[in-house]
Image (tube, rainbow, N blue to C red; front, top):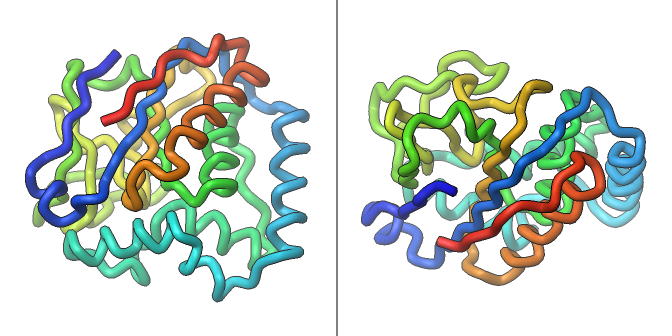
Length: 220
């Protein structure tokens, strides 16, 4: 397991922040029919009860957007991933089908509103990870996005640099079909409320769809 710390700059700007880390051994797959049945069911449910203008008021998403403002980023230009996923569905744009681990994390984000980092744990350099704030000119290659301006974004860093923000994770540590160990980081900018349930949801889906025992959870 990794040692995850929260920097003083995050504590000062986002004093409510609490995080959950799930580390597990997994067996990834290209596609899971059962998982996509769950994703499609959520898609139908969301469209039945929500409008696109409601998304930013969902409590977890609203707290993440406020954290962006406090750290120096405009959440209207750099959307948290959970918000972007919900907006995609409500605009009738299908989710990308990537692989079971990525699709699983996306489902939990959709259900809960948490922007969740999902990393291939074996690609992380060192065992210490710190959550800080992105700096001017700090290099970061977002997955499928190229170079991402992370100045003012909350960012997790390993020994080499940034690995994930609530907007996008880094190509360097992304999960793939070869991934056998996952580290999922749940960002609770509204505190502990709902965080335990989100972590348990990840564990449950890992057990159902990745031949995992659900792994270990710690809070930070």
